Length: 229
Image 1 (spheres, rainbow, N blue to C red):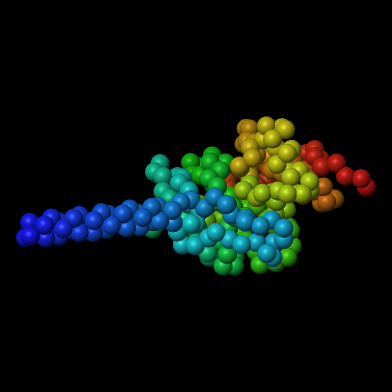
Image 2 (tube, rainbow, N blue to C red):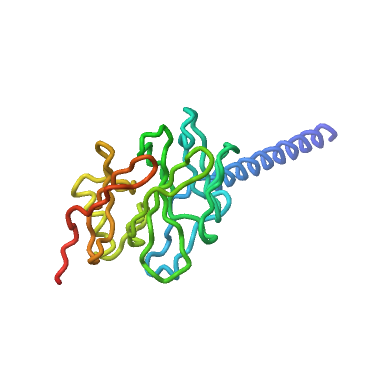
């Protein structure tokens, strides 16, 4: 009888241990899911006012690069109100509003100073479909904007287009072998090409020469969006 009781007790302990292990495994899986990179930004593309966000403290953008040009990479993280680095010597970059950014991209060294530049599009609390893509550079003690171009919301690299108008930019990039995931489309001999909105309301390629952390020699290239006047 005692032997049966001991065997039963051992089985109960074994089942309990397996249950605890399973719970730990589930918690680990849930923890891993929480820290996955933020990939699906826009859940509903019908109207900016109705977009829902998959954004919390564990699902912000994070990129790596040599921001201060010292030869060592550091991280850059997005919070709701600023971009900050794991290198405490790098001053945080304050963002407008409290919704963060749609995307955060390391554009590489655009101005030849040894440090990488970043691009992003802030999330605005408005009804407009216009926004601004900005390129920033770190000059040793603070961030400085060196270029911006007005774009539509659907020019955001990770936006999911649904209408013909929204899909135009992505279709054109694919057809012409432009990057679908980067804002700075091409760079050659210091010239970067960006799709922007021409003053007459059409899409156009804007050529920008970046020198000494300043954008100069800006000019519009070809119009890429046919439109009946």
